[in-house]
Image (cartoon, rainbow, N blue to C red; front, side, top):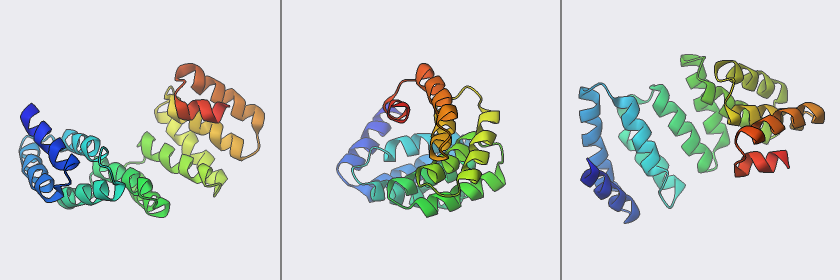
Length: 181
């Protein structure tokens, strides 16, 4: 497995996308037979996220996942890859589909709410989505950060500071630090 992974990374780095797609489709079949598609798609997403061009990452992921379009893991990864290529509305549509299929998908609820707040659109819906996400993952620092960011965008600075302070105390990464600052 380590050798295959190394070869796949080399295909990606060298821009040999067709060879990578062929390799990943073969690995998908093995994962499907062993009922392990979710882990396969998590690995695939991790791999393609290292592509130099986000458009290559999305193209590879879409080609490999063609037969599994409605799996929550696939939908979430595709949504995030669409965001990376600058297609926030496509990301939003995919996340809405995912939430329809799996209403308790905290990451999808959070990503959709955060994206809307970040673009300063539908802030009340963004707040509702992030509140739903926090019910499913109450201690997640990224969801807590999103709650603060939504309140900031709503102009409720006291609430924003409370949530962002909590997120920063839990995980002072770059994005949370920037929001808190």
